[in-house]
Image (cartoon, rainbow over all chains, first blue to last red; front, top):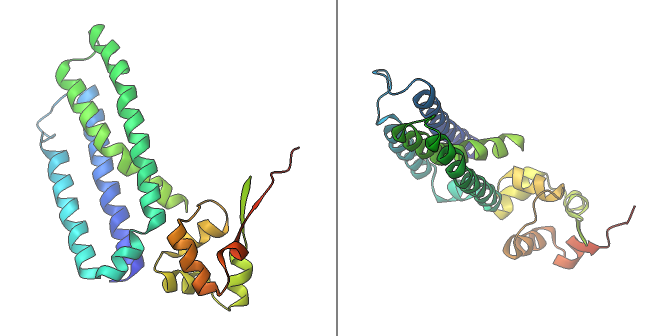
Length: 132
Length: 70
């Protein structure tokens, strides 16, 4: 496996997990838990994505993996985590007020905050990665 | 203070492409590109690896300059 192919796999995995987490949160917030929306969907996608990424890195070997997860990549991941952290902090007052006003239910807040906190850093990292 | 670098000039002097330099020091081509364009500031370890590959001391690759006041 080449550096480029491992980079593509990482982007695809991060994008898929991030989009599914955010999609799940948005659907749960506006529509609620439907039969089509498995409550374990974000978790399943996260575990499968982790296995795929680990397997791809293992097959690629140490040298290629170190290049793909190099210093810039780690710096971008740090930026993405910082963004995710502040987003998670910002969601507390936003959803706190929404809960207090009775606009959303506890289960909706739990689903949205959990999936956004997990998914947004992955999407932000993809954006930093695509930006070049 | 602004961090300037002469990687592009030194890389061309050594007849290296961004990809070749990246491969030599074990980072991605994007990392070299972002360092050259002053988007990303490398660690000391990476700066020293660059110095070895570019056959120049670190202070010849990176320099601090006063930011011009407009």
